[in-house]
Amino acid sequence: MTKNEVYEIINATATKYGFEMQDTYNSWYSKQNSDSYVRVEIFKNMDYKESDSNNIILCFNIEPVGSVCQMGKRTDAKELLRIAQDIERGAKFVAEIEALKLSYVEKY
Image (tube, rainbow, N blue to C red; front, side):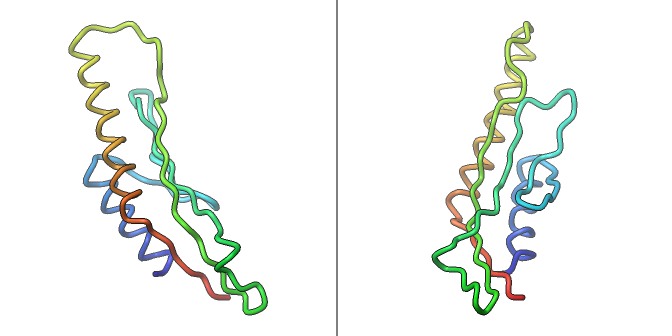
């Protein structure tokens, strides 16, 4: 699989769960705002065993993780339920990407 193919899968899954992803050098992460309670980050980890430095072939494994962005805010029950739903969306997104066991190869 190529990096672009993996990114398309991640982006489609992110959209399905209501997230918008941003690409950086070593990860993709969900865009945040002041109302965000969940951050999803998907790391591009190099697989040194599968990579071939002589032929400049790099292999990467995808590792999704999630975190809660805001804690300790005092709020009412309605807002707590919305926060719980945001956390659930993030957890389901991370679980779905984990289950895919994505990886990609870059040749230079």
